[in-house]
Image (cartoon, rainbow, N blue to C red; front, top):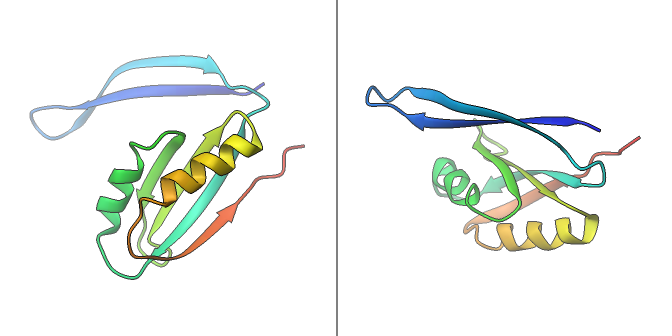
Length: 107
């Protein structure tokens, strides 16, 4: 089983992120994960990434120096839930012209 480290950050008055707490938990070995690369026709990749971070199942969403414009990591307990969460999260993205979904092979 893998261990996942969760780091909670807050933005201080100086605009610098500071670590407020660190927690560790065991990651479920049966969880499924997808790495998704998004290409946008127009729009701000930072706003898209920020919006996706609040979607259920999204572990990470970061803008990239394009293309692709945004990378998203989605995780769920199983493959079917992963597919459902991925479709729900991506359906909210306007001006997306392409998505590449990468599923890791678990050994």
